[in-house]
Amino acid sequence: PNKGRADGHPSAPRGPQPEAPRPRRHAMAFTDYSERASRMIRRWSGVRDPPRKPSQQQELPRVCVARRPPSLWLPALYRVALRLASLWRRIVSLAPVAKLLCAPAAEDESSQPAPFQDEYVEPARSIPVSDTCDVLVVGGGPAGLSAAVAAARAGASTMLIERHGCFGGCITVVGMETLGWYRYEGVVECETGIGMEMERMAARMGGTVKWPFNSSECLDADYFKIVADHLVSDAGVKPLLHTIVVEAIHEGGALAGVIVENKSGRSAVRAKRVIDCTGDADVAYLAGARCTKRDRRERMGVSTVFSCSGVDKQAFIDYTETNPATYKTWSRRGGEWCQQTADKEEHLRSPFLQEEFEKAIAAGVIPATPSNMDLGGSWSALSDAGEATNLNLVHQPGVDGTDAAELTRAEMEGRAQTLHAIAALKHAVPGFEKSKLRNFGMQVGVRDTRKIVGRYDLVGEDVRGEARFDDSVGIFPEFVDGYNILILPTTGRYFQVPLRCMQSPDVDNLLVAGRCVAGDKVSHAAMRNMMACTVTGQGAGVAAAVSIRTGQSSSTVDIADVQAELARQGVRIQ
Image (tube, rainbow, N blue to C red; front, side, top):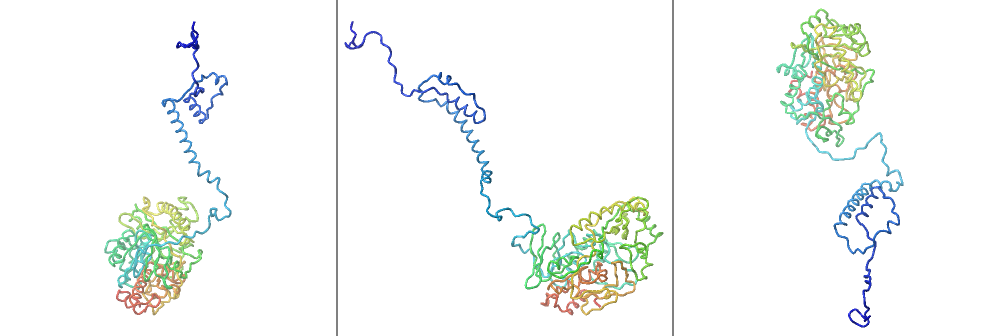
């Protein structure tokens, strides 16, 4: 047989031959990429598979794989991408912490946060000028109202700033409803000044009732807010409420305006003249004028004034007639209400309550605390509707009216004491059995804080000796009420008020009116009264306007020109 090639060639082998192995181009062990990706993901999540045995790896079939279909490797890559993205977000979130931990330590203390200090230095900044005027009056009480109206009537463009939401000061804010309760027979005072004009306007508008025992008028505190609005509007004064003065502006050695703050922010008000009618000499103090303040042991106390409703008016009047109080009654017990008089006052009737509180303490109705032992004082107006207003019965001595913390304590303590006072009234005073609290004043009544050092300081001898001055801007009766002294002006005696007690020798173009004019204790007990405040207010307003009109400063204004304008406005100066 032919053992040649299969194709018949003699050299081809014959018969069946074993198949020759195919060439191995890329032989490799079979790899399940889906399983590998799953294992990788499990490792990242903290789950590790048990180790594989070498025999398991050897038993895997070995195949030649040129390419995996997309249906197998795309899902695995997608899951890997998601995991890497999550890991990247974690790294980014930890970057600030790593930066802080790796930052080099500061070489000096200047890079460390500064500890809290006792003072903070405000950065310099520009503020807008919100208003300009000829005369700026700060404080809208009886003095401020009189000053603003007088300046406007004298021809000056005038602005009136008040920190509360109404004008009227001690009348509307505190609830003291008498401009002058001293009008017993024989009083001599100015009948045509702005103070008297306020009372007459209130009476025409139905906002007054007669004081119990003389011809004085009791002003309805809430109604007087409307009276004050009319006075300001009729005179052409520009009003600005809810605003406080926080700094003074000086130019050329003189006062040129103030910086104010309110809901609109911080701004400047420029003025040719500024009149401080704050009662506490706030503007004068900020402007650098010298001021005095009495020791707290000598200072007059503050009062929480309140009103009651539900009073049986007739029953109460009958009680006061059968149990009459006089000014001698004030001194039956020591304390702030103990008064030195001139004897001529002691027989006069007075709206005074004190013994009734002692009865309530003795009966155990109110506790015998030191503050309750001091309860007592005056009542004022009674309405046919059963309202007893201006109840001046709660007093606190030694409070600094220029200290916000002390005022806060006084406000809260005064309201607490008022509840004891009402409980005592309900127990011991006929007519008050069904009474209840109607309202408080908006703040405590302050009598005694700063006073300026003036070009002339009034003294007690001026008040009690009928002093006369060449620079008089008005008159006021010999009425002294304070520091345990009570002198009622029943003899027709009066003194003149000098312009110099309203002028500071330290600050030009500044005038001061109200209870913070210059003077000693006894003169303060006279000048603090609201009708006296209207006298100084009108005098300061006219002096400011006239000084601008004549081109002089507030300290060099010609008193003859000032007195001529006051006479034109109907003020009695002699």
